[in-house]
Image 1 (cartoon, rainbow, N blue to C red):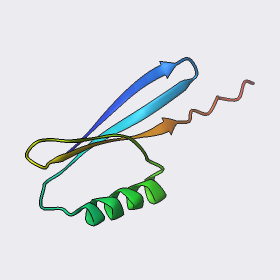
Image 2: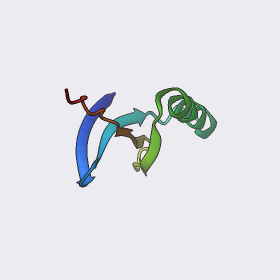
Image 3: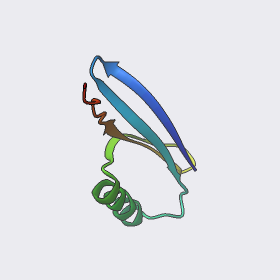
Length: 73
């Protein structure tokens, strides 16, 4: 389950956020490998991790949104 959000914490920098949930059946090593793969191939970085009492991991990933300026003619 993923959800994308966008927010700008400071002027000039925009971030895209992705929320990912891992069930308790996934081991720590498996979750680490999945997150590393997303970081290497998608440019995501870890923003925060929340582990619920039932063992579910809720992870928030973020990446910068790079906007190209249109050339002026």
